[in-house]
Image 1 (tube, rainbow, N blue to C red):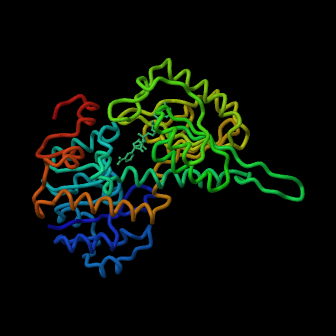
Image 2: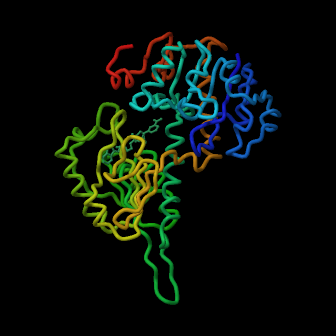
Image 3: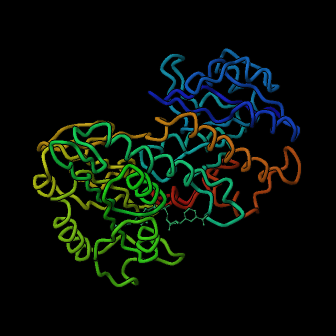
Length: 387
Ligand code: NAD
């Protein structure tokens, strides 16, 4: 069975879905591997590195897609401008693909239908359930770790002030103040990074457990007294708040945002658009030169005036709506992702190469299309269809 690893085509995407280390592991399992030439260029892995690991190098992406039984990618299939064809159409009929498909997102519905109509068996890395057996495959957590770290570094880079307290002959420079909203995996890593840089960190989450974790990393939690039955759904994940509570939360944030030098926004509710927690009026009260990194931008963003894909200055505040933050730490992001996907494939074919185990909980939860049907619940709901 041939695994194909194409070069990513999304603008500025440097990550790659396999490294020479994982190529060797796939070959040990009994797969053959083909890698598109220069697929590892963005992370300084050469074609020779892949060849030495046992992969075949293929120059033509159309040939790679057409010949591979299973394609491994980082980002969802996109239209390839150079070739003039959509990657979904380049997959061979009845073939397989594993990547981040974000199937519920309306932007991807047309692509999901193409996969269904071509009888592709597709799996999405963002559908892997958070059970302990799946931890090594949890690419969402891996990429969130990278995002949390890099969001603080990007803010630091944009600031014209120091983060740590610095004593000088002229006087003492005060440390920067961070406000981190949403303390899931992204927020916690942002707290840890801001603390390492010497910042003073406040954090806010609607789940008490998340607040406790933030405090254990040295953040001071912002008081927001919301009954947990209004904030936490079954399974421990956040609920989308009723308007009345969102309004109260915005009032609390408005009190703290005025004194922040950096605001990291990472408040998300699984399967929903991101709640707006920072309005334009609130941005207007922030210090000139302060920075907002709106990590939730892929789900719409937590700030009302974030511009998707852009770093802009509005009301004297720098607002970052850059998507694909993990691609900016491409080497470690690729190392993590390539290993996550390796463990996913190992589990997928645990009954033997070529024998899919669709009853496995991890596989069933991440299956998107199979035998001309859409199986992913979030996508079916968002598309208003049952197949
Ligand atoms: P996420 O990306 O879905 O959401 C980020 C955070 O936003 C969450 O903490 C959520 O409570 C918060 N949030 C939602 N609405 C908010 C609002 N209105 N105001 C403020 N905050 C709001 O979350 P995630 O990073 O995927 O992690 C969610 C939880 O799952 C975490 O507690 C994490 O530790 C846990 N987790 C478990 C595993 C595992 O068991 N394998 C793996 C990863 C994460």
